[in-house]
Image (cartoon, rainbow, N blue to C red):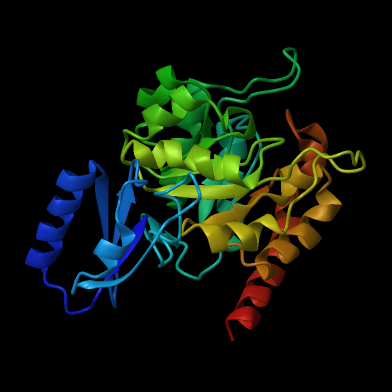
Length: 335
């Protein structure tokens, strides 16, 4: 249930009113102070709340029930877009941010070289896998802790914040110096991991599961936010359908849908969605046109010899071309 208070409502009135709601109805009251109004979000069993009585209070502008099971991620509770700051980078403020880099960190020379090149092309964050969940147990699993150290070296060399994937709760301490922790598609419903990530004060990039509905995706975000961490970035990376030509099917419609349902930033991953480097540009352009706040794109200096996902990786030269088109498109849309 959400209650919108009138602009003239004082802080003292709001506190008194909130305490009354907690005492009378045994609910938790979340407060969101907007530019023009204050919104109270009631979480818990609100079936016994007397809407007519609440609506009759002098300080109440409007009141209505919320049917969606996700509350903290719901735009109804938080009408304005959430903006997540990572250093000097702002995600969700209307600008376009590109996270670029290799699927897997392979060496210091590789990750530093790619970091410098993608930064020169306009990327604002560096992505790179240290721990790699792979379908085959025989495939390259990443450099693990060494990979994290190499990402930190690349950050020191370029100033780019780093984004990398976590696989288990026992690794959280290792990720203390990572700027954005990525939860991969396979772990979207690893609820124990999500609950632990809810306890830390660090942005979480939550990828949509392989076959997850939009509501299931938002409920996973809710797990993180319910723990106290509101810094969640949603990533549409394609879902599994009956189509076999592409690795996954990028759900472009999910971008405007989620932005309508939630206040959280939404980015797209055209690399994993397609599995084909020649499709990345078109899918990235479509994602920006659909309203994505950013993109995460795989870039490798030698895709044919990449240890993972070379087929979907752009070369730095190709990325430079794509990035220019993306920023040009974003600029035209803003106008």
